[in-house]
Image 1 (cartoon, helix red, strand yellow):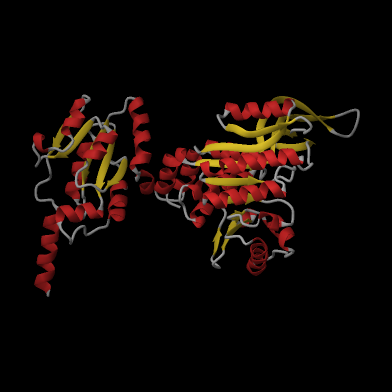
Image 2 (cartoon, rainbow, N blue to C red):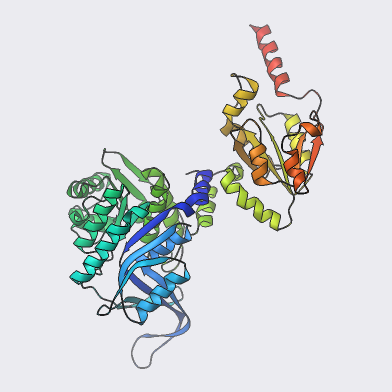
Length: 491
């Protein structure tokens, strides 16, 4: 997975609207020390130091999607009790739409209390309802889903088997999504997956897949057999089986299988990792990623989640940083305009002076390097706008560039004097300059001030243009002519 792809995703994910339907609960954590044994019974005494409430169950999926930057609505049923009010308050605090959440006076809102000492869970206390919804509430929930499904880019069903996702509610969600032409992703429970028939994708873990298929998974062959049983029973388009330390396996209707290895890191707690997988998948698919690319995104997110204690969220920056570590430093400097703009705004707010220059930089040579080093010395950060391959062809003819834009961008990003590289498609960098608003616009000494594209924009807000003298005799054209001369003579 490429860093620039992930950055572009997060730059635009505020436009993604997600609906999460499922069982909501409060996750309560009591953090403390356990240094003594009780005189009353052979049990540890936990001195509670800190108490914390988190969104649990389907709420953790909602919280992860919101943390990743999407617009999220939640549809569920909670009790008209203190836990229910606390849970709704948590959603409001995170600015999550709860118009689809209904209160049922007879229902008990789920609350799971975990007592943790020395980073170890000592005990868990569950207070919850598991009864299916009353028919009237079930119909109310289904009607709301049918009325609003078309407002979203993706629907997520987070089933914790606590009674909200009845067969009627599931059918209403899948049918409404089909009518609207949007995908439905399901984190399933139980062994009868036929109740999710018509969904786009299911995300069972290995143990759940074994229970649902009746196949013990021991190797690639039995894994594929289990997947085939589940897909045939449900008519799924895709099935993603998460396999802990062995990563994930994505099965598609056409027979394609993609195995995604786990991202190696220390595991502290796997609780809530499935919610993170579901959230990242939903965001990727709704953003137009392929199913395989979305699964890779989910795999990265899950690797981060298991490194945290308790149900937790994963942030865009954590994912970007993790993806970056899988690539060389040069890759981290190559940014889309959408990803670069907020980074430069933050640098400007810190008082940094941004220098901008641009060019084709085909066949990088010493003249280029000295020019870029001089440009970098003019300010605190140097941003290079690189002409795309199509742009170079329009400017220099059909035989150029000799080096494609991906290679050119990596060669340039490897230079210490360059902080960021961004590729532009236009013949001139005018739009790029207008968007980035650099303090200094650097150009070669063969230009006159009046001929510098973007000069008026930069000077309009107090910036300036700097002309830099090129090293004599150093040019791509000269290199090409020398090569042709030498090799033509040999032939």
